[in-house]
Length: 377
Image 1 (cartoon, rainbow, N blue to C red):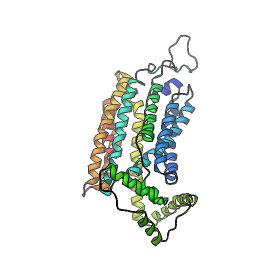
Image 2 (cartoon, one colour):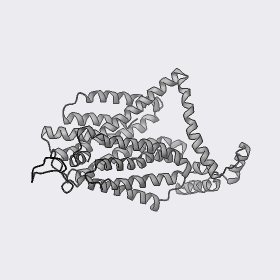
Image 3 (cartoon, helix red, strand yellow):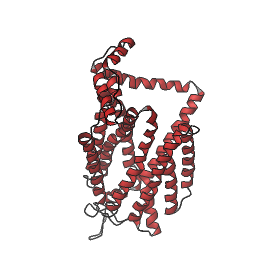
Image 4 (cartoon, rainbow, N blue to C red):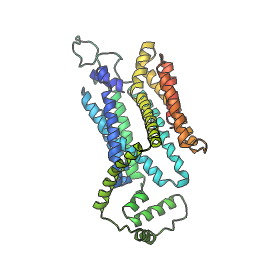
């Protein structure tokens, strides 16, 4: 899809990374903003609004004509919703799952490779089918001869169809979330807002859905706990102020990392491991299609069609990796610590292997290994 946009709009190689820079900036800002606002407006509204924002701006991606700057800007806005939705989903799953099933949060990563495979299959029938001949000049390029074939909107609609289908699917998911399925507010959030009766009501509905005995917890018991703790109920405005204040006060505790060498070393190693995970993910998601497309063209394969077919094959092992990650973090002798160490080690080796790849088959093998290990983390 990205290669079709670059070709149609005549984007030089030096500017191809701008769209991914905007997307990553949107993910970072969205995660920070929604990570704060979710404790103000609640999980339910944040859960639905982030999906709505992603779907609306995802659909709008198909609107600009010969305006790469607008594409980058819209992608940034769509990423604001996506960047918030990812951590909010994990928060909701963590708060609703019982203590004995918290390890199932790991399976959320299973949907990332599944989503990529589905999106690649859709692109296989849209972006790969209805697009310009590779390497043809943009219709906006200077110096075109009269009647010369060029890449324009009319013969390059595939990526727009792709954006419309994926944006429409996200909009349907929002509709299902908001209208069809009854999503209850998190009891933990309700308790933090002193809405004890609503929290207990949600617990009863959860128990009824799971055909479990109703909880014996009462409003009076919760009020008694508040009285003993000496925490009188606060107004909504005061609670919101406390949320913002506590959010920024957490950054002050970061200075403690630099007072202990062991803590600093652990923090640094974890930071590099997580950054490495994201670097490799970004490399695979952003630039792999371009690499495959150019390698396929140079090898004389079926170019764009073959590229999307390979992309489906590449992400399929990620599904297995997510399942392995669930078992890995649950093993007593492995756990989260050694799962992270092992996956980071394998990923580093795979990154080094990538520099020695010179053909399409090698690229496919490398990223199969990369995604298989990465999702485990």
